[in-house]
Length: 532
Image (cartoon, rainbow, N blue to C red; front, top):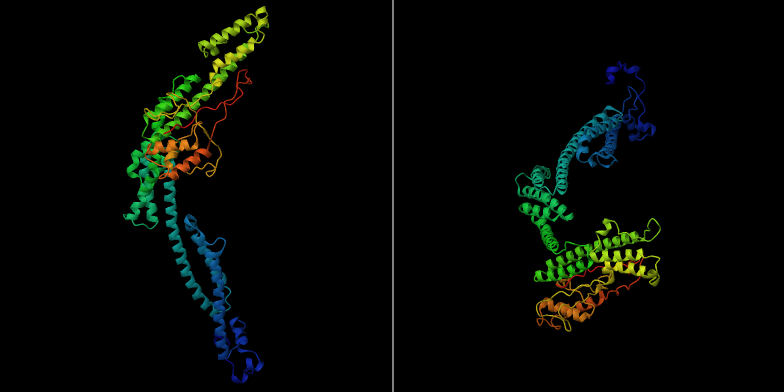
């Protein structure tokens, strides 16, 4: 190129030849580097060896610049804090153009560092090749993340349907609608997950999605103890439930049905007038007896019924006790009020209080009022403390439950069978479990049948006698021996001896804060589980 820019010069006018590198003891590589970094002056020439060295250095410099670009490329795509290939879903789709622009900017910056045309030619070809690879890499990532985005969106749609099904479990029609809506979302999710339409795998994924809608609704109903809707949903969607979901739901539905039967059964046993504590105590005994008679061959249902009986009557007795305490308080406050002239109360309580008293209690109140009317006379002086005695007698007439602790009758074990020294209708009390015991302390590793039947020792039984009674109940008297069933017998004997204790004695009569015996004491209600 220089020969077209510089006019020819006659040989005689030419300057002396330029010194060679060797004339100056300069290594060929160092001298040739002048060309590599564009340090030659216009018209300056190199000898062939130096030009070969310069070509090598140009290639080296182009490779060095390419390495720098590869570092930038790796940072933009893979290793940087905002590396594009680390993005996913919607972010990957939206970030593709920005990543390509950053790569092009890095490419231009590196290309601008080339010193001459030779380096630019070498670097241009390498950077163009990298551009093709970058576009393919970014395009592949966009394609994969688009599918992942669509799959995640479909999965979120299924989750929305399951959550709504849990809220609307009481509406079977809505659950049917959510079932149908799940088909399109499940199909989209299967397709974006790489499953071929119509394949067995896609059909299985669709079936599992539909099953999950029903399971979610049924479990929500069971979790709220809304048993009838749960059972109705199960019966309606049973054919759409997967085997894995059925394995979980079937035992729960069986338990729900058993619990529902128990609720209906116990509802018929409760008395209609829950304020009378004596009546409640007698009805509790009768319900325990009736349960043992009505369910002789179904220990599980019998145990569920017993639990519901104890809870229902315990709540009724608690409410009745509270009502009695409230009545004692109201009557006492009325009787303590003075008349307008400062004398003792002589008028009956208001009707809101009076109508809550039974005839005997009304007579007691009238007797107190009659004695109040005689206040200040000689009759009062003869019985100075009669008013306090009247209050105690009145309180006990309202709350007879406090004067005599409740007991649990023995459960009938069949016609003609009874323990020694036991007469018909005998009353026996159970021992109570020792609270806060570990499994080892209470020897709780007993046979499952004994746990299910809920046998408890009586206060007058030894652990061996209770274990014998349990074995007779399960195997039949004479159908077992301590030699062949030694392990079960020893476990039961140890359990009944360690885990149960005789309950504390009934609290003695004592004047409580309400002015009647025992009113400051906590009275435990009977709730012992009956024998199976």
